[in-house]
Length: 171
Image (tube, rainbow, N blue to C red; front, side):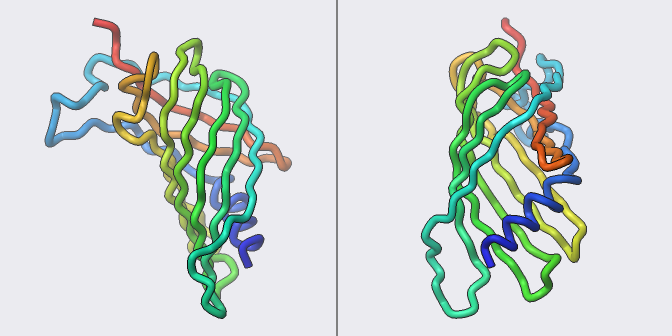
């Protein structure tokens, strides 16, 4: 069951994912970094290893799963990430969902630091929807103030990314 959910999430849900534009917080404009930042696109490839973890819900017939995530990024984003994924399947083979959080430790176009990516994905009878967003205020070191969204592309069994991001301008 978990293998089918992962296959659905990776093969369909991620292959056609669409990024959302980075947005500031309209209620708190003082917290918005986009005013002094320019959106930049980083691209490259990554290798991913998923491994099953113990699932909390072990009820008979459960469709929940849990996986560890380990990635190696190449290209404009050079580094690694670790995280966890929670997966839910349904009786309809082409419908599923997952959420994940991963901590990225990397150099982004020459700037070093860490940040957290949050994934939210569903597949509705084969129609994928994926949003991967930088968790606000999760950037450290030279990536402090980082915001953005990531798009994952899977083609011919290979993973690549498009990362649209902003960093505050130096004062």
